Length: 78
Image (cartoon, rainbow, N blue to C red):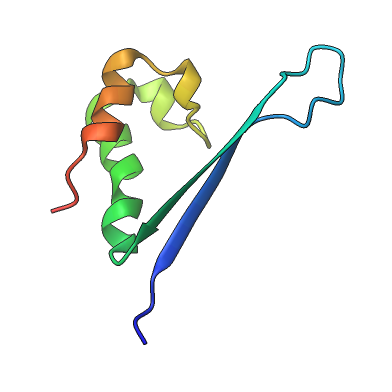
């Protein structure tokens, strides 16, 4: 049997608060190459972000520029 890695992420909230969103989105990526996928955010941080953004613990896709979003989505693994 062949091992695979699954990355799962959610966006939104559970809708319990006053300003809560109406929806929650869940995305998943299944890969045979987790190391290559894991390097994508590191490369984006190093090559595309200003120094102050490189130190942030988490990058938010919805707060990123269209250029950064495109870079993440189009990044080739090999």
